[in-house]
Image 1 (cartoon, rainbow, N blue to C red):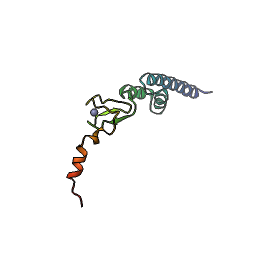
Image 2: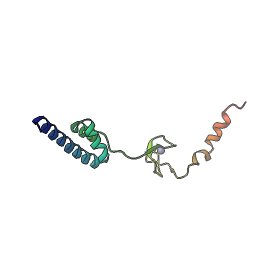
Image 3: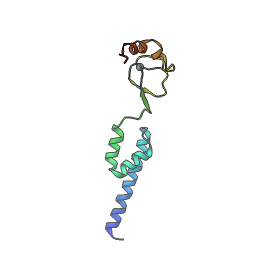
Image 4: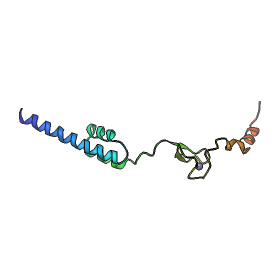
Length: 108
Ligand SMILES: [Zn+2]
């Protein structure tokens, strides 16, 4: 085994070790070990660590509030912005506003 092969093996070992460290860091930040590890292998450990540090922690799946259109967690039962009760899905149409809008539309 010549010197070039040994240097290459040491480089790969360090690359994998740093990728593992970035994976651990990524898991701590809530992005998952696999994402951080693969990003580190494909880009570079330094770039991957910066990306993992910058990108905010995922907050899960979100949806729009039907009353104020702000982004809220999909499992929310009350909007944190407008305090609307989201357990009653038909309250928007039962207050008569949508019916009034329907009457104002021209009927052909
Ligand atoms: Zn709302």
